[in-house]
Image 1 (spheres, helix red, strand yellow):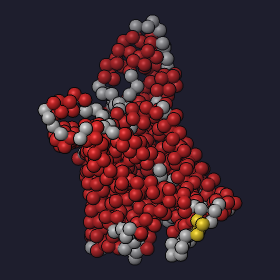
Image 2: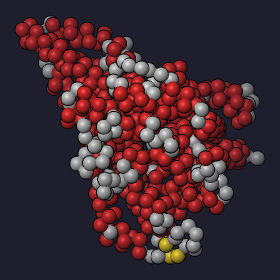
Image 3: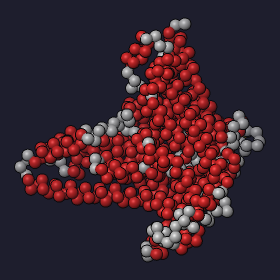
Length: 311
Length: 299
């Protein structure tokens, strides 16, 4: 994210101030022309914003609608309007496909594991880096920051080789380790930039009270860091839940299949490949947990997604 | 133990696990990719030193030169499609009107979908004959929509540019929204006192004030599309012909399908160098402070 989201509430005030200044000017006719033009431009921005809204939601709406069709209705009914028969047959089909349950469980385990690893590691490391007690802390911060610049696509071949060598290939915890490593640089950056805002005086007060580093950590840093923990959890959870290339390369067997791979396999070579409603229902279901989280935690989501700004 | 000593031990305990994980799965693979690019290796056999053979092959091979070209074209077209759109939308949702906040909440929905999921969704929207657009072509007589969007050589590349924009514009919109909201209202007041029209205040206030957002967003678009893989792998596999065969796709094919890991590593190294150079350019262009400063702005 780029800069402070200054409270927008100050804007109308500023606007009315600027209007007051402007109306004090003598050229009232010119002002009328400007008002007219600003109405036009307001309508133009409204129109553009709405066009993007239609473009952004159109495919999602289409997918949702198709997921409520039976295979026959898919071929015959209206493709864009919810008229004609609607049914839950696609959803019941997909739920009764055994692999879906496994995929969901695997994805949940991987996402949860990644969140735990990333949050724990970035919290511990971020705390020590912010305190800057030794050169080791300062140097390792810079080394880890450099990782933001390394595209994961460029290192998948060595990752494939290394996971084979250390026997974590085709295991979920192996996937968790690599996903966590790929998310660590941004998580550490988010953490350090947040913890930096804790005033020095609070640390000093803790020290005066005779608190050691561990007490300072549990009684000052962890409680203060709670908001950033939520943000990093979402950043890591989203990254793990939706990642495609790492499970594509690092897992193989059906028992270790995560959702993105499962959805893709299902659509490309399953017996269902031409049963579009079932594929759409699968995609809908796989996005559902994130949608529910998004509805509950929109602010944290926006910031967590913002973490990708530097990825 | 001195205080200094103690704090070093604390740092060692706190930071080392993170550093170890990061080194094992990011730093070592990066160095290893570079090393492999100077070898011949196909998983089963031993690793043979190959000198610069892979590299001279890379620069002599018309296929990889073509991939490099497609990669740059994709980056350029993605930039043209995404950055101006995201800027316009970011300024739009930075406004205070209630409906814009509602729009903004909906704009983010694509970011919640996995690339695999959204690729399949688009595949069915664009599906010839039975897809959503084809249906409009037949039943609403919008015949220009009945095309083979992902398989025809004239269209596949631009279709991908549009889908990738659909996926990532919402994210860049967030960058510009934050950037626009950070511009002090006083600057607009001053401009309007000077009699500036809306267009003038856009060119003289908004645009210069958004320069860091522009640099950040542009770099992320460029790095992201240079290394882009997922949607292309799922939707076109580099086809039709080699029309959408970007470097990352090329690397995957040569590595994991033809098991020429040495040569694939040379391609991967090119990808890595492109990404790192651009990311460093970002830090330099936007001033070193922004890497930290912009983040603080989030809170």
